[in-house]
Amino acid sequence: MEKLKRSERVAAITRALSCEPGRLFTLREFVEWFGCAKSTLSEDITTVRTVLAQYGLGVVESVNGAAGGVRFYPFNDDASDLKFVQSVSKDLAGPERIVPGGFLYTVDLFSDPRVLTRMGEIFAKRFYRQQPDVVVTVESMGVPISLMVAKALGKPLVTARRDNRISEGSVVTINYVSASSKRVQTMSLPRRSLAVGQRALIIDDFMKGGGTAKALASMMQEFDVQVCGTGVIVATQEPRLKRVQDYAALMLLGAVDEEAGFTDIRPAEWL
Amino acid sequence: MEKLKRSERVAAITRALSCEPGRLFTLREFVEWFGCAKSTLSEDITTVRTVLAQYGLGVVESVNGAAGGVRFYPFNDDASDLKFVQSVSKDLAGPERIVPGGFLYTVDLFSDPRVLTRMGEIFAKRFYRQQPDVVVTVESMGVPISLMVAKALGKPLVTARRDNRISEGSVVTINYVSASSKRVQTMSLPRRSLAVGQRALIIDDFMKGGGTAKALASMMQEFDVQVCGTGVIVATQEPRLKRVQDYAALMLLGAVDEEAGFTDIRPAEWL
Image 1 (cartoon, rainbow over the protein chains, first blue to last red):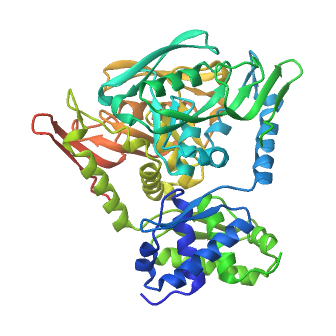
Image 2: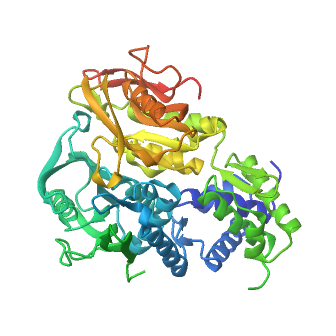
Image 3: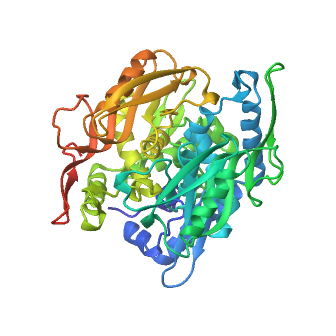
């Protein structure tokens, strides 16, 4: 293969980094790809880092030392994150989203890969300094957003199940009361899905009383895993006092006025 | 902002394209970003297209006309796709994955964003010529892989639920018998989740008798939606005759020998 120009190497490097967020690429990997000198590659990577930072398109982080290299995180700038959450809130506030009974139809938006990717990136940016080893959620509505957070961080996803499956081997099961359903619920997690001492980031789609997040936190205790953060797409304004204290919601949901066709939903203040 | 060099524009373009597969970017968008001439940008895009093709890192597709532009698909070359599925098969064949009762522990691998991303890209490459408008699955194990297929195609995901939620509004519900569980199962899909005449790609994690895929296909008929493909991560070798004819599995599962600690699992032949 003939030698590539800088712009060509930069295209290949950017594609590799940006399609596998959080993965450490060694300089040697790139040297083997391109057959060029390490110093040339360092300059290529500086180009990628600088322009992505300049355009708010992500962070290229260098890790020094023998096991060193570079990795990419798809973090956008704060202003465009806020603008994005504002646009989602606005969409959710529309009268056509109110379902009889005063509920909000959200499933199309919260199943859209582009919306999920972006929300996942916002959570990843919010929590990556807490250095989670794993993202934890409970099926089923929490899975899509959690997977996208896990992807943006380059970490595995662990999902507690409502029913335990024989193919999961031995499991830990806990019962809890969810404020939304006011019923006793069950969740199970395979024994081998977590290791003692890991740090878990808990992600879910919705929080009302915080019962589910609290139950996930109790489950983490059973595994001697530390909760290093909790994020939900939407939290209700009421009850103000949730069963978990520390959590980050993207949006806060107030009253859904079925008659007036208006929903009070807005971006959270930390954004 | 001062003018960028080619390598800098190429980095920004590659990041934008590769983080939003399937999304059409107009040349004008890029012109506004960089403040350079269209002809310069066309050359930039040719650079990106050529090097990604050369390294088997993806396809940059041009769409001509007034609504034209470019979009990226994260399709890898066939040889590396096969190698990837081989490595997953080898991992799944290990004795430590056999759970008492002769089941396979797969949930860690099928929850790993990198594994899911890559499998999603393989399905996307396999089916994108069928021009699906939407990816359809059923909760809960089908969701992660389906979301990654949807992401690689840049299309929405629609998920049939086991129980219907009040927040989904009016739903269509069907009952069916699953060969794996030998029980009557239920799935529901909100009325507003699909439009008449759309083309659906059905994706699930596992196929034994094909009952679930068949039920999803019947559900599509209820919505006047055409099934343009069916993909599963793992299909069992037995029964040979499934309830759906046309499907693509990544891997075929034969016997799980609990005593010998050996599982017969291999990549499908089309790979």
